[in-house]
Length: 157
Length: 258
Image 1 (cartoon, chains in turn orange, cyan):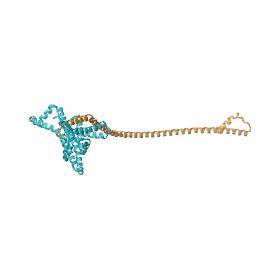
Image 2 (tube, one colour):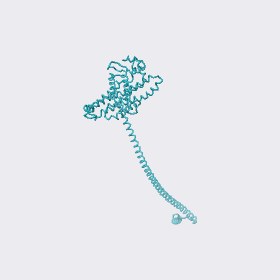
Image 3 (cartoon, rainbow over the protein chains, first blue to last red):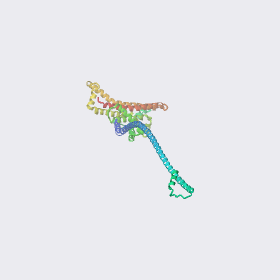
Image 4 (cartoon, one colour):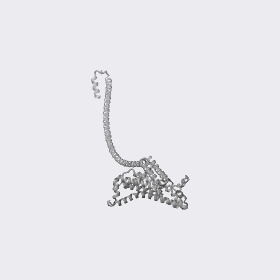
């Protein structure tokens, strides 16, 4: 057991090992560790941000929903109002139309009555004339007795 | 020397045989080939594993290899951040290298004491000591390197004069200059010696106990070696950890300007 040249050999080996570790081993591994640390920290921060955003979005969605509800109820009321108006309007129109129809029908009826009366009057006048002819036995000149005939028919009217 | 050791028979011979390194060369220029080989191989294993993790490094979901490597990196980084407050590109990789390398050295202790020498002897290698941390050269090589870094950073941060002032005038003021100097020198030199000897002593003793257990009859061996091995898992990790933490502490002391 003695100190000898092995010492020198070992020192050289040691120096080489340390140099190699320092140059090629420590930096990449350490960097990757640090980078992963950063990545994880970033990820955690992002997750937290995401959570906050979700809460915010939920709040926002609730607000929007509320607004939409209010709006829809407004729209429904409006629509109901409008529908009532339309119904009223159409009722009015229908009423007017009916009245108009009734007036027209009445006018037509009057006219027809008038026509029938006219026809009947003519017929009665003709009948009375022929009856007078037969009674008198003589010929009555239509042209001569026009005044009489029209007086009669007027009396019939 | 080797032949003399080999000649010794019985228990003593077995123990000595196990604790004799495979060497080449003479005198100071002796090389412990097994220490060099195993520590280089384990260093290669460490680099290979971490290089693979570094190449595949992704910021997404890490794989098994990357996960394990990152676990170690984070562990070492925490230790460095706990005691070192400066900014240095060297200290953290240095600490990682020390921790992993020492741990792998020590881990060799958990292989059955006879298996690697047996394989070695099949390949014609007579002596094989597979645990590099039971070689003073290995532990001292590391601690002396750390010591050099301590001196280097002390001078770099405090300046040559600042460092000299710290050696001379602390802790008792300028009137006790020689005493201060002596105390400081002992303090500084104690650092690498304690680092190296602590690791060496623990692992050497652990290995010796494994060897002693291996000398017992086979039916007693598991009863003793099993708990010792479990205990040893703690020791090898702890020793690697201590070496690393003390290195960080010493270097952060070197960075502190009083």
